[in-house]
Amino acid sequence: MGIEAYKNLLSDIGVDVEKHAKMMNAGLESYKKQFLSQPNRPEAMKYFDWFMSEIQGERIAEINRIKKERKPAVGTFCIFVPEEIIVGAGGACYGLCGGSPATIPDAESELPRNICPLIKSAYGFKLQRTCAYTQSSDFIYGETTCEAKKKTWEILDKHHPVHVMNIPHMKRDRDLRMWKEEVYEFKKHIEDVIGKKLTFEEMVNGVKIINKKREALQRLDSLRSMNPDVVPISGKDGLFITQMGFLDDPVRYTQKVNELCDELDKRVQDGVSVFKKDTPRLMVLGTPFAPPNWKLHTAVESTGGAIVNEESCIGHRYYKDNVDLEGVEDEDTLIDRLMRRYSEIDCACFTPNTPRIDKILKMYKDRQADGVIYYTLSFCHTYNVESHLVVEALEKEGIPCLIIESDYSAEDTGQIKTRVEAFLESLTFKKKAKLFKDIK
Ligand code: BJ8
Image (cartoon, rainbow, N blue to C red; front, side, top):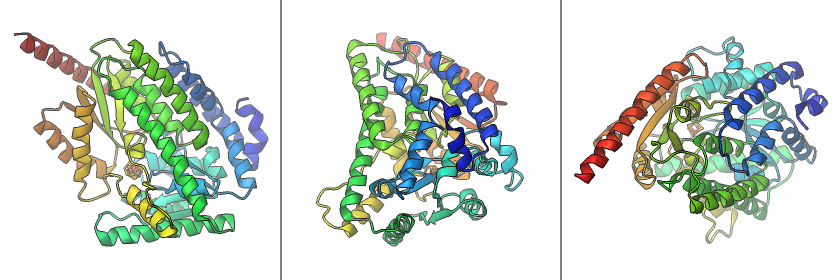
């Protein structure tokens, strides 16, 4: 239907309809240009194209129907949110807008300029009232991961209710005990929103729904990255699908991702690749890509490389672990399993964070990648500083790595392209040299 049909609904939830329409039109144009022009896209991408066209229309109407039934609508900027509890309550948990440069100047009227663009962009969306997801949410989930986010919640709370979960920065037993209490408190907060107690069965149901969603994404990841000769879908489409997983209804989304995977499975069997043979295969490591941040993927894939995986929160870090339901028969064990699953997240906010490095090395080998790009958003100190340790480990293993630090502006697009181009050339040269050595 398109967002035009939802003007009244958007205005009812406090969206600045005029500004919002301008922004959406620009977003849709950019999507068309960057995505629809790709050759040989899978048929099943049609669903995701449709979803994009309804991203601030039909999906918002669905969320508002959920709210009318007094079920929770929760917006987030972080994968530490125990979404199983929200979904178990029949509610919607979704990522909020935070990937556009257009809202940053407004945010800088209240926040310092030298903090990460994700935070400023998201904050600006709230000030401008141009994200229908933010406007629809009962509350925003905040967490104590990085300094900038932690302090921003206090200011954002003046504009929109925020519930902050205290995420520890170490994973000792006493930290995990505190984390478990935080999960209990989050559940209590959801119960306050819906005005009733959540049952054990409802929560188990929420876990099952989200486990299935993560399994579908694991399947997509393996189809994208585990076949060295066939890449059946572009990295840009792969990223986009993952991004939409933070907005769509999880049951419908799981079904659509699995349908896409059936098609990709067939492509792999038939040897249908969207990249020509010997295209350098890259993994991207680091900070999340909130839509419409497609800058790096566009730069790489328009320069002759293929991105086969994102070791990112909008990527592998989000779906790599499931909640173990084996032997879970009471609420306390369930909450404990939830906390344990979330404590497997290897965000750079933790110290030490060595499991992340071991995981990256394993991922690289499993995917037979040719190189990695370590990507950080400007002013993200945790990921930026941690890059030193990651790169050291990569160098030890002889893994080629390019470091890119960027924000949401278009200013460095040309520079990124040039650096990626040079990196890809060096990878191709390395490959040829190896081939030559093997033949000799
Ligand atoms: S679990 S990466 S989603 S905190 S990029 S706002 S860390 S300054 S987004 Fe993140 Fe959760 Fe960690 Fe993932 Fe701060 Fe860094 Fe900005 Fe970040």
